[in-house]
Image (tube, rainbow, N blue to C red; front, top):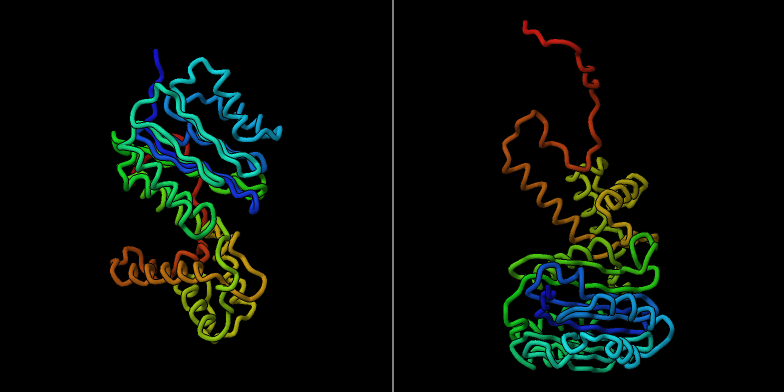
Length: 333
């Protein structure tokens, strides 16, 4: 039984200077992120699609790990594959060189465009304008590799993308030691497996992930915690139940402890600072949560007396433990 073909457009890119490689992809195919993107920090990145040969992922990365350039990896993988005419894939090596292959039996329109440090490829597309727009967007977009990958994906969809429509999208970006807790290289690994607007949903999810897990903000934007900023933090922390002191603007031990607990409970460990400053993104998040809590208290009718008087950060109250279960038949009084 023949495997389903991917009507897919993707971009593979690398920035050796910052040690980052990644892939962004969209397809009218369920869970495209489970098949197309492969990457390894310090080695390179690969996207395998059309009648995708998933062996290109691990085998290609093994060749890149040996130091082979992207063109040689493309040549070796395609020449060894009897099904190459149905394949499409793009490769960027550790030095940032890019190469791609589009088999002659890939469904129209199919093709690729290789640029400096990236390659865009797609099949079952509205036309060549899709990969062309992706390439121009990647080249023209400011920011780091993540911003440029997402911009390329958006640009490809604006030119029609997969002519069958949209279903799934993925973003995989690797950087040495940048994964959770520093235990791997998966800096960003996000998938939207089934959605009517997968690229927009991917961007929405990434925005939350970026706020919570990444530290990409310009250090020059960090704000000193003093004066009105400290008062605002104390107020918002108090609304959420983390702080019970006065709003003095002095960043005392109680304020610092309340803020540290908030950071820990909301998964902002990557945004912790030891220099008396706070990131604007954290300020905005805390302000929004406090506003939502205030709205909840003013629009929700209390069911349990005092239930709306304490924020979600308040420590659980005391009380006796539940009685042990009673064995035997239950009787009524």
